[in-house]
Amino acid sequence: MLADLLNAISGGPWLLVAVFVLVLLDSVLVVVPGEIAVTAAGALAASTGDPPVAAVVGVAAAAAFCGDALCYAVGRRIGLRRWRWMRHPRVQRAFTWAGARLQRGTATVVFTARFIPFARLAVNLTAGATRVSAARFLTVAAVAATTWAAYQSIIGAAIGALLPDAPLLAVVLSVVAALALGVVIDLITAAVARRRERVTPPRDRPADDRTTCPRPGTRPGRTDPRR
Image (cartoon, rainbow, N blue to C red):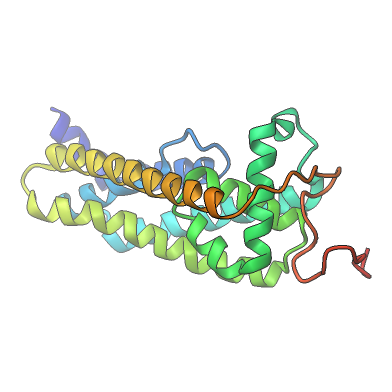
């Protein structure tokens, strides 16, 4: 019965609608399982043939891009201290980290952060608050969203292709694979962060009402002439 239900869902528009909504929410609420939704949809698409895997990639990429652009717009509009959760010390440290990385290389950090749930939220908000060029940010975000969507979908599609007659099992295994990859990415990220903390002394600079770091492209101690 569950297999029949999955076939019915994949044959209608609701699967793609669900993927779009979950991925969009995942961009602003890290607890929403956007990666799992895309991977499961990819497995179901490959196992049943409907919808096409390319459609899953396209919808997931569009939703990811819209979510990242929304976070950038929020950061640009209200800064990094407007809401109570933003002022939490741990969150402020994440914003400071994101600001420092954006100064070193905007494209690299925006692209990489798309694959790390909390990092992408911090980076996207900080990019807006520090006035990273909108054209530059959106260009990189579009490439990152497409790459991320293809990556997540292909993981599920590979499992679905191996189990064409068992869509339910394919979805379950794809979810397990997505969770496992998420754990691996978190472990690698934590290890890299600890190594950087040992090498680079922490900078305890408080954030002002708008940003936690100078605008990318300006030197510390100088005032941005456009402000």
